[in-house]
Image 1 (cartoon, each protein chain N blue to C red):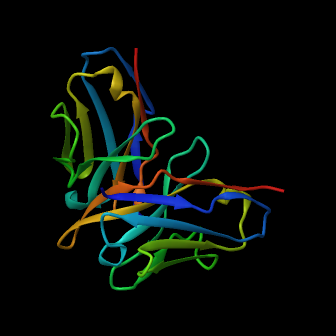
Image 2: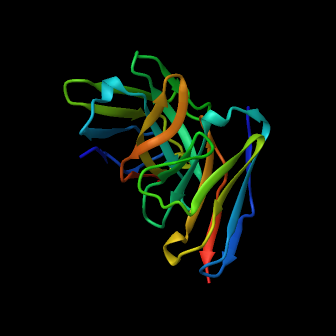
Length: 104
Length: 121
């Protein structure tokens, strides 16, 4: 069974800063199956990145995904206040525990 | 508009049963892989079950033998029958559409708003 470990647990940054979120798999996984979600309080998750690096509809290009094998990352190049959320990675039927992004 | 709307959640005693519904609009449930995902209070996401377009069904070990996923093509609706409920089944339950390109799983691209299940005496 694959385990996804996300780090850090919480990221507190100022608007305009760069955020880098990590998702590490316990064994090598297919990049095609690696997705990221954004979840704001009281809302359903929203697909953000699929296939490790393809951005889903509706998200600006300051969101980007990369990685392969066991190490994947989500980068938000210039944080906006509305990016405050919990971000989850997913590999097929397994989710990471999430990273909370707080905007100072 | 592509949309999923869940219903059927509520407060139920341990050992009880509940059936959740997920009504789809804007697309056909039977032509897609459809999943249930849950989120316990203050916790992360947990995949629960999937219904493949071809009819196969799969479950997380935590619910296997207790939960049953089904669909009604005439109503374009997905269901989750939950039996022998436990306190640890307390969660918001979301239905979601799996996004595929060929055999590649590209995440879940449509989600409902969720329905809350509370298992407590």
